[in-house]
Each structure stands twice: as structure tokens, then as C-alpha cells.
Length: 501
Image 1 (cartoon, helix red, strand yellow):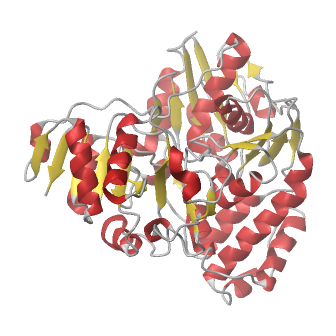
Image 2 (cartoon, rainbow, N blue to C red):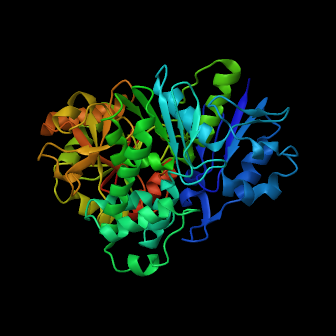
Image 3 (tube, rainbow, N blue to C red):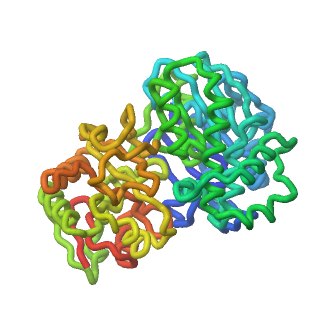
């Protein structure tokens, strides 16, 4: 059956048709595909639903979707004529593989989508599953045992909304939890703020104490961030750990971008899997995969690099730049040599990654040995906060030589201790790193580039950050050239074209 799957979210709109995972922000060039990012009143884009939800509703044999609370409410008037049967709004699953279906559509809950995507991409025959974010439709956190039974933890684990609120209140903006996690490494525990978190978790309706505004203005931002991370780990250990029924754990939802939490899970579960697009940007994938598994008995695994196919760039695109077409082996050798000599490179190849992590197809690359490289990239290229760290992409054969962890991390999903003093450029202030382990069978060109750098320097990794500058990750060659021109990158590679200024 030809299936079209779409997510009715308030942000990070996306669809999936079995081949292309369309992330709206990459094409509209608006972060999270929001028309306005206001700390207290973000405004979602309605055009995504006009252009993709409505036209595709009748085009495919199966129309599958899921929704979040605010996402549906914001566009309910647009889709009212398409969805005369709104009983899906009352659907509250008790088991992972339940669904609601009519002659017109196939629907699953928001957190079922997170869970199905995580589990079906893991390769495990059975697993515990944690789906945890700010707010879906029926839930904000569920735990699913190895038999598929759902335990609703929404009244006990409201971490997603707490992280988002605190991130806004310390000036790191709506959906700024990732920034807060980076800031946490600079802080120390604050008893007063820990008491605020305890009050919030236990209060009816999860409200903050009256003293919150005054108190938060008196505590250092980094101490607030550290205490929030510390309390998060306490809550996870107290509530989630005792629910274990399997040696395997799958994690998804926006909170699963918390790399410290995911690494801690590896000490309690033997195997831990976090998929490459664990947040709402992966909702369409989970919904599609759920349908295929339940209705067609098929385990569909999306390609890690599922972005829209891009056209071969026209020579006109490189006006004012020096460009040359070369074979990929020559490019890899030249780029590795340039990086070893201090160059910072925009690396663009093939289709883009699913999810918010650059995994070798839309990356900015640099030398992890340089102790000043973080400050250089933050100030001259990314133009972002100086406390934010960068990740290493390390050849899978060598990750245990540099990092204290017990299993690979192919999607930059875990933060673990660094055990080498040779890579200060990717070592955070707390002596940790959020690593990507790279296998040649998954990304041959990227692996071979890292290997060339290894031959030159003896270091089997590169600093890797997303190819963007205060914008969504670049999607097209045009995006890549525009970003290259406006920031301090030294070299740009687009497939087999080497570009310099």
C-alpha cells in the first residue's frame, strides 16, 4: 500500500512517504518552522498544512497521521472538512500497537509514534521503551514494557515542559533545552533551585512556587542549568529505572536529546538505542512505520539520509568563488590536509540527515586537537553562545581509546567522559563529549575523510557540528553556498566540487 504519513505538530513539521523525510524547516529556512519564535507565545506555520496535509489527504491509498495538543488546535479549522470523524481525539492507547482507523485515515497517538520509531529502528526483538517529551496528545511521558503495555507517567515525569520553561526563563529561548544542557557543565548544585524543582514535580498541575521569579533572578544561570540536569537524573533513576523488564531500552521524544541521561541508561540497561530523529521532527517516520508493522507485517527502516534529492549545482551558483570538480579521493586527501592545518570546512554530500544532528552529510568540520577551535567556530561561523560545545565524529574502531563508554553512539545521542588529553577541541568543560561513532558501511565518503585525517595526524576523528549559521541546517547546494559566503568557513565541498573563497 502507498502510505503517506504526516505529523500535526506545533513545531518541527514533517512528512514521510517511504523514501523522503521532508523536514519543513529545511525548506522554509525558519527554525522549527515557526512563523514567530516568541518565548511565551510561539506562532506555528499554517502554510505547511495548506501545502502538504490538505493536498495529500486523498492522494494516497493510506493517509496516516498523529498530532500534538497545540498542533491540532492551531490548525483544526483548516482540516475540519477533511476530518469529519474526530473520534481520534478521544483515542487513548493502552498498548503500543493499538490504533484508530477509519475509511479515510490511520491514526496513532503522538507518544506511540515516538515509541514505534525508536523500537523498530533498534533491531531488538523486544525492549523497554521510554517516550518522553513536553506534551503530546494524551501523554507527556510513557514507559512501555517488553510486552508492549503502556504505563502513563505523565503526572510523575513532566521533564520536557520543565526544561522548556526554565530554558526560556534563563534567556535561552523557546525549545532551548539543548543550550541549557550545554550550560549545565559550567555550574554547580543550588539547593534553593532544587527545592523549586521538587515543588514543581509534586504540586497539583505542576506549577511553580510563588517565589520562583524572584529566586531565579538571584541564581547564576549555569547553576540553574546544572541543578536542573542533576534533578532530572534523580527523577529518572527514581521513577524509570524500577520499571525495567528487558536488558534493552529504546528512548525517543524531545527529552531523549539529553545525552547525559542516555549515557546513564547504559549503566542500567545492557543496550540503549536512541534513533537519529527522536524529537517531533521524527513523528512522521514513527507513524508510517507503525502502520507498516501493524497492517502489513513489515519492519520498515528509513534511510538515515532521507532528505529531498538535490540537483547538481549550476556553475552560476559559484560566481565570485573559486571552484573545481575533482574525484572524491583527491578531495578527501586535500580536505583532511587542510583541516590538519587549521581550515574549517563545510561538508555537503548526498541527501540530508533525518533529525537535528549533522551526521556527515551536512556538517562543518574542524581539527579536534585545536584547544581554541570551539571559540573560533562559535564566534566566527556559528555566531552562537560561547559555552556551547562541539561533537567528535570518531571512527568506530577507535572510540574506546578516547571515550569511557560501553557501546557505540552512531547518532550523537549520548554524552560520556573523555579519557584523552589529545582532543581539547571536542572536550567540554566537564571533560565530556557527545560522540558520533562512524562506520564505513553507513557513510563511506565521510568515514574515508576521517581516515585520511587519521593518517596525517594519528587522531581518528574530526570535530563535527551542523552546517548552519543561526538558521536550520542547510538542505540544498544553494543553502550551502549562501552560508559559506556569509560566515568564516575556509572551504566548501559539495559532493565532488571543491569551493574556496
